[in-house]
Image (tube, rainbow, N blue to C red; front, side):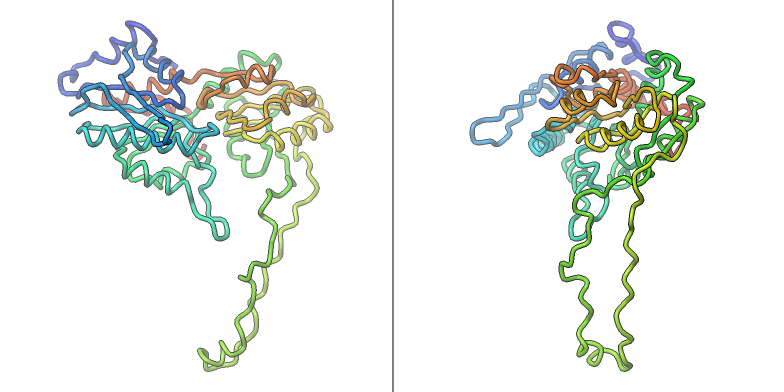
Length: 378
């Protein structure tokens, strides 16, 4: 897809146009969580990164100093989750946003390719929906617009009181498949759980391939039923005190779910298996899926995901697994030395997508071009 390029071409596209005089000046700041991404974006846009100093002194309180004039300017703040120090990253981002707000920036756009806590978007027992808390914190700090990529669930956008652009990495991943997997016509797209079927179907339709689903995945820890006091029926005296009729008994318990033995639904024999998902953190589920696919006759197994968090020893586990031939992630989170720890790991640069989104928002252009051939349910 045509996008702004680095150098003078990026500068001319950024500053050109009939309504240039009506647009406020813009600044791009990069937080300490992912300096390489902010550098790449600024190089593509053909502009200098804003002067932002972030100090982490010995008393552990983050101190921010903006050495730029931000009054009445449009400010883009680039950060990303996926680090082991995620809570400090969020606090640092909130302080930078609030500093821009208190210094009278006209518009503040947070650029978070990977949104922290996006996996905690559902209520579980006596827990909470932490993704909504993060959204409220960002909006209250002063964010007017959010740019992110491949949210864990697109419904997270409703948590924000500002506009959200949820970009997609699928065009880059599909292009990688076309260019780097020989004989991809003999491949099958794999959903490693029934929940990922919609994403797998989207890839399969655009690549004109079949899909297969791995069913019967083991339950996550913490999902097992435990008697914590909520299952106890009301005492007999309760019905006598409140109801004028005899209490009919206890509410019937729901039949517990029993997942069948793990198996592949679909034909993968003598085919290239391509597992697609939005993120990879702990490698266990991907390792189990790859072993099952190889046992079912798949010739090679490729893992294609957007966010390569890969916490703990996940890179080493992937490197040691003979059933996985390649792992492809996007640079939405800091990669660090993970490519050295796992030689199977390949990284796709999506900086140009982020830069183009920034350019279009600043120029007041439509974002529809970045969502071409992407359905609303993708």
